[in-house]
Image (cartoon, rainbow, N blue to C red; front, side, top):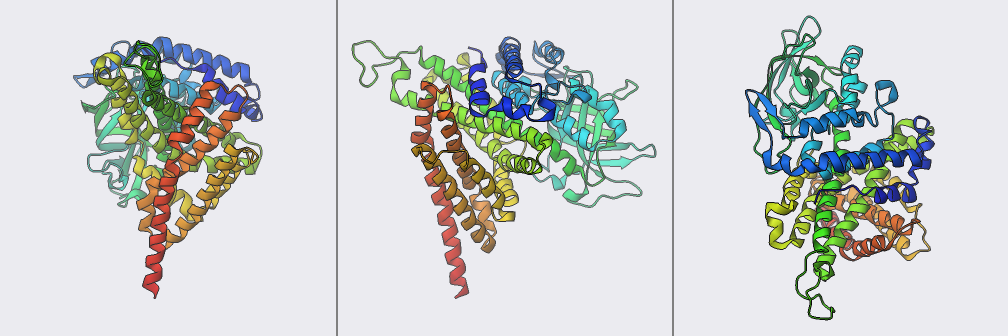
Length: 576
């Protein structure tokens, strides 16, 4: 079976739980974007994804991409599907109208890309960086670059890449060696090799806009070593006169998954480019693109888990094996009636809808941070995005892989063969834990860079805002409030211990990120369960969350608490 988006569930979360139509209509750019318009956009997106993109999932995996004579041929049907994607105006969904887009809220784009990834992760890699490239160029590009490239990127007529990684420089971008030599006409000549470049070469668009992290070198300039010496250059595949730039695809990687997406090794041989932003400020410009990509990767995780769940749930309602406990008669039971299978399915459903709610709220906060009339609201929204984006990226992609593997288990031996398509999702999902900053780096970013510098004050303000949305008279809400308070206290304790031994924060960063995610999931399910229109399925998933997922909170809290206490005791002993 192919993936089919659930517009009903999405609209329930947006409208009944998050009150998105009212909140977004309060922002000037979206005054006319009411619930009816949002619903129409979601219905059209669901139709496009189900009818055009999802049927290409297996072809993309089995046929894959081919490199011949330096040119990449994508799987059959991909070019036609991408042309339909552009013709439908989907690349510019959240791009401002003045820049050639539709000017719709970021949350609708978030839903679109969740569904696209669920239906066909390999295809989705092609347009996945368009929004980030647009924002990077819009905020940091010169007027000449913006006039030349922004309309093409906004419309999707040209695709874009993010060229960071080199063979010796993965997570440590300070080791990047690709050089850019300034020219008299204001351009640069870029030389070096980049690896792991998604969509570095393909047949979907005539031109590809490469955003390349590099180091200025020339007779009058020599960039310093390390990350502060990095600049960002825009290097197109095709120059304005129609000639091919000196950018060459040396090979495409043979990967565990994502066979429908060409992951390229690109060689720049003095290729013509232009700086984006100030010299030596390349990382600042690039991070605009990377932060946007990280939220989209979190949505990929949610979508992939939903796709795996849909397959497992459908199979469990068809397959009969043995009699379930308590069943009567001699007939074999549907495996969904077996407690072990029901637990798997209900647990993944709890993760999917809870994480969706947090991700959709984050996308809404992006718009509030940009367009909110109240300065305090904008500041709170930006704080939310800064804190929650790494949490979502790491937790949702981890669960995508673990949960998809659990869904494969529902199929038994049938899940391990290609016929049912579940094994492809497991393979495709694995990379999401690695790219756009490994999950370990996300945890360090959260704790070391976002939480500890202000001793947890920013996180405390965010958690207090969540607490205020709950009703302490309800037992479930009171339990969530207790956990939010416990997390605030533990953060203060961790800040003190990490001050005494800075290495501690790096040791427990993964545990701390999971704690934050579990607390937010608890908040999400408290909101979902009480929303108008919540049904039996929501009640079952909420119960599964409290029974099978939430107990991890105590385990992770215990790990962090014990590490803090040991550090403080050692510090006290050393002072005696």
